Amino acid sequence: LVIIIDVATGTGKALNSVQKKIGKYFPTWSIGIDLNKTNVAIAKRNFPQYDFFNMDAENIQPFAEKIISVARSYGHDPFVLVVASGFLTHLVTPNTVVAANILQQFSRFANAAIVSGVTNVLFTKRIAKKIGWLPQLRFNLHVSNKPIYVLRKNSSYFQLASTHLDLSLHGHPQQSVRCMLLTNQLRNIAPSSAVCLQTITSLDLGLAHIRSKQEMINLLSYLPKLMTICVSGKEDWLPLLKDYLKEEKRHIIVNIDPDHYLNKQELKTFSTQKQQRILQQVGLYRPTLTSLQEKMDKHPAIYSLPSAQDQKSLFISKLETLAKEDDAAKYALVKIFSDKNAVYDPKKAMHYLKILMHKGYPGLINQLREMIDSIVELNSHQNLRPN
Image (cartoon, rainbow, N blue to C red; front, side, top):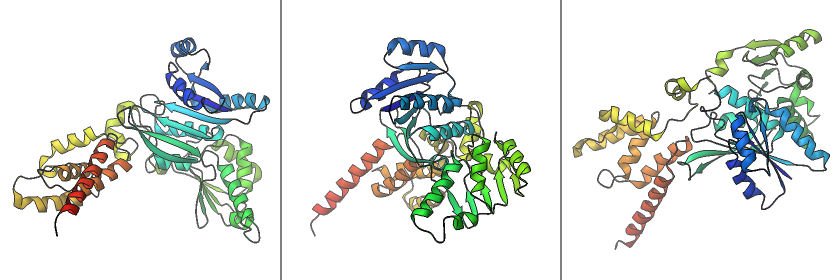
């Protein structure tokens, strides 16, 4: 059984599309949730074969766990797929911290998730990875080449450097440490897996998702030598941690540093009104190619190829140096090297084009295909030349 949960389902069209594809191969239970009562009423009328609920997705975990419990009561071991088309974008979700929390909840009950939107989503691949997902970035050719994130669960993710364990942003820190324990046992690390965990003296739990005091107790029980815990101060479980440390008289220092997480780790809180001014500065929202073109048009002396032939070589050299830090310079080089009337070099154009694609800029698929065709054509002409 595949349980499909469509978050912010709207009128149910996306849910119906996904169900038609998956339903060909597996039995499904299709569920849509939306905060708008009118949308839910229309969806129920259009697709009576599915279940729709009027609810807020910001607290989706308890609801999803009840759905899974019902499926198991009928003898199923369901595979849970979450679809969020347009929900985790600045048009719907208030900021990246909220988006990360929702992704953390998804990681607790879902086996996979598909996340996209008509605007860019409010998280990066790095954030998804730290939460406990294996992210793959694909492009929707039918919706302006907007990126689609395909996420598969990877709850065992952690970062360990010497005696410091980094579980910041993680969706299930306790499970990650359990996986460390199990992995060490399977590899027969001598004398036991406890040796590895006993070396850890500092733990980063900034903005991690911890659901209960018992989870906190279980997590810290694996780390007997722990001396320091780093947090942002925004965690709703922070009072539980302080109470536990006081009750158990564990001498662990709690370092609270909101700036470290909200300013330096791609998680600066923002709203729709602030996006144009703030988001590009902190890398949370990838600017469009239109914004790069606007920057190029605003500074032609920096980005426009001079007409004088003797100045072109020096100009391109300076622009390539600037491109190491400036995406507008990369895009300018793509245009220059793609122009057969300028400094035509399709291989270099494709190099900068691929960099922009990997950084999440939409609308480059067709240009990349044209570059590949140009390179193939150029190589064919060179091979046909007589010696």
